[in-house]
Length: 159
Image (cartoon, rainbow, N blue to C red; front, top):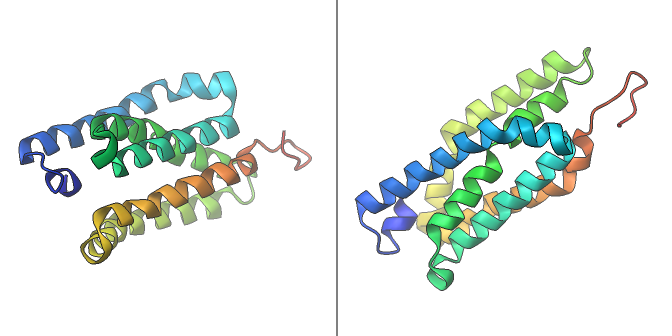
């Protein structure tokens, strides 16, 4: 919401847009299973990451394109399935699954507490839109790494 109020939107407008962002995440999770069934886990992660990248880019460029709500919707839809699909891929090898899932849950828990304030501090120092570039880069990395989330067969090969 700070990025929106800093761009001239009222607090109420920013709160509504932030709420729509969370609705987009929820909608993405509700239909995500159908998407995974249709195109597979790896392609879902690739599509999701690219959708998030496009949303973040539109949001960052809101002073040029003036479509922050579209950016937030694309961003929300894009990030909706990333975490569930990552956890699913970590469970492919039963022997390693508990440690891997524990690791991702720990990282996500710590991140949920620390990343927001860290990006906020960076935003204060370098500008909020520079701070939004960090998630954009991580989403590009997720897109590049999406093939490693293909399911593993009984012989340990990705299918």
